[in-house]
Image 1 (cartoon, rainbow, N blue to C red):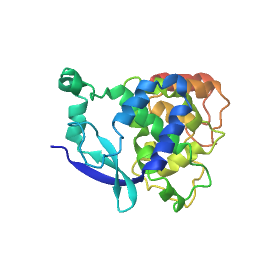
Image 2 (image 1 turned 180 degrees about the vertical axis):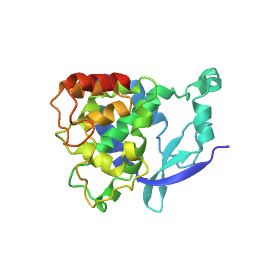
Image 3 (image 1 turned 90 degrees about the vertical axis):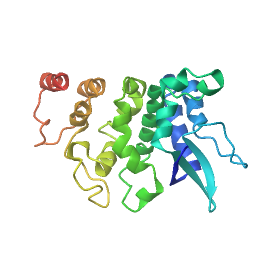
Image 4 (image 1 turned 30 degrees about the horizontal axis):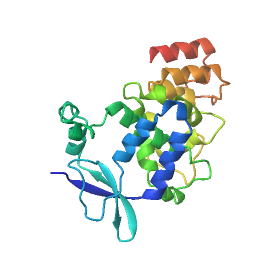
Length: 239
């Protein structure tokens, strides 16, 4: 029996975020991935009838709000299981491959974070209901198998030291200080850690190498600020 919990996320905003993320890197996101996501996000029909275990996520109307509805974790286990993959054609159609699914979620999360800049504040963040999840979990999705290789260009934009997005992400969730208070200031402030410190910390060696080749923006006094280029490279490969 499928169980659901409800998350009040505006469906149109969610769709715009997903579309933004996917259309900004078409070379690494195939139509199959987008189609696979749509299979999990179809609106519930008027009769509330749907194929057995067909969706982990769908959109319903609750009190005038279009709400994204998620299913219990056991449904996820079933949809990604080898049992379903080997089932008859009618059922195996709903099998979800984990790597494409993580790619879509990582891409969608990054697209949300790339909407945030130094103008965002603790009051405005409520307009981006997916932002807390994106800040906390995009790295988890990107670390799955080869997902990071599919979203490299989007990751480079987040880690671009000349842009405000990296500071806005760390302001919401500092992966190096995960116990710290979220959004401790009204607006994002310049983080202590530079992008090149966080990239290998997250295990993104390719991204770190890209940042090494780019001009450095290290703060004086930060652990990475006094390293030479060769020492940067050593740090990356140690990770």
